[in-house]
Image 1 (tube, rainbow, N blue to C red):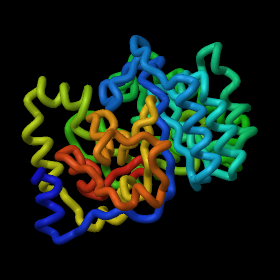
Image 2: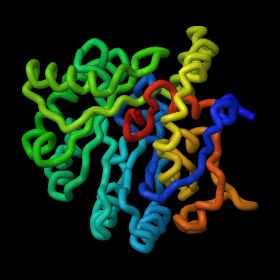
Image 3: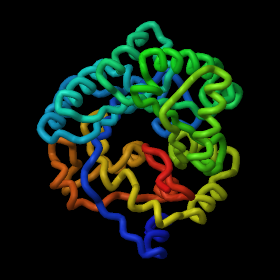
Length: 314
């Protein structure tokens, strides 16, 4: 029994699937940035991306099963040649579409079209901005990232994001600690970004850094692994379990593999039924019979106010 399961058992809280809500598609590892906290270990050097045949099988599943939300992530998901195919296929069946956007992609010549395109299709932009201070952002995401991010936010504001269209910013802590109170931090972000740069946005998500990939390596290199895992375990909040994203999400890898969340995908915790399961092997109803796969990293989603791709849970 892993430490997460121990906490569930100790608090007598079951973890079961709920109603299916979100199909989350990870299109691959290629990104125009290399961030220290990235759970995907993405970067410009990565070449692994979803191929056309897989993309169209995923698209066919969307048309058949009509998920309420299609959440497109990566890497920088816009670097996929199938990004627009997913957006337009999902919107054609009435799905709410989320683009997990790193902001700096908008500042590249090849993707300058994004603000207008995303606005035209009513896509929600969920954008990484780990602080409203330049030095903190650049320390986590690379030199010059903050300045590019501010320019990109101005372009998103100019086409209606933050006013008539949803613009969500994402905060990740710097270092081995839990996020602060989401509502209070959102108020700080809104004040500082408006006063300093004239930027408006809809809401803020606070997301705990999970101990996998680059962040796990950093924890071990600096001798913080044990203390961080203890922090997560000791901060377990049973009230967050009902809101965990794994209860309502099907996560899909770049080969079409089925996972419970993007973090499980990075740890290769693929769903199986005597064989590895792919999206075209399952339906929302059939997958409901399978248990959610867990490991110690799941403690990051239930610590403190909780954390998911939709921010704090309590």
